Length: 300
Image (cartoon, rainbow, N blue to C red; front, side, top):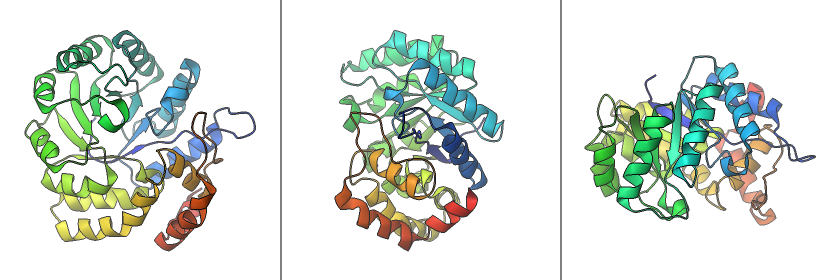
């Protein structure tokens, strides 16, 4: 399935009463995304608190998402772990549960060399059972997948793209040199995604799409069509939402926004805590002024 446009990095709703998956809220969130035009979904990534899920919960989320979306949009599962062996196991779980592709982040904390990263992703692509999208987010992993390593990896037939979360214009330009019919370059940074798509990126894997799915897809479509003015106008409209979602580490602010829009409780798994009370008034103001609350409530 072709990857393009706004792909939502889904948050995972949990019940505040017992810390369990809130599958009702999750189903409604998936439906909201599909009806709003989102072009793909990522389940159990960093926004989905994937590191806090056990294997059964991971499988359940992928299976539920698969049933809800049928074959309307691609389904990616966040299967990156700290070791290659565990990443292969998690990717096979995703494949068995119905994912179309895996989003595989660079291994956090262990800080492999570039050759180690090349061998890691190659092994996962060889043995995981799914096409994989590379994911580079050095601010979280302390590990930077460099363009010269991506140049080697993009030749692998099972490596189908990269999500680059560095807000670095030069880095995006370097990666776009590898874009092809079989390798897609995606922004992983909402505030700079319009610039990246105007430069040739295929789209964005977005946190903000949880809250504003229609607007994020519209931004992507305008940028892909070369409508720089329209894309920048939408980008400006979303600027305050992007800033709100960065007030505390992701997915803390997005979970607060989702509960305000009716998609479950503002509950995260430790060591993450809910959005600090001092930000609530600002968050309420941003959601109200952006006009996002009523459409979301109507959609559910």
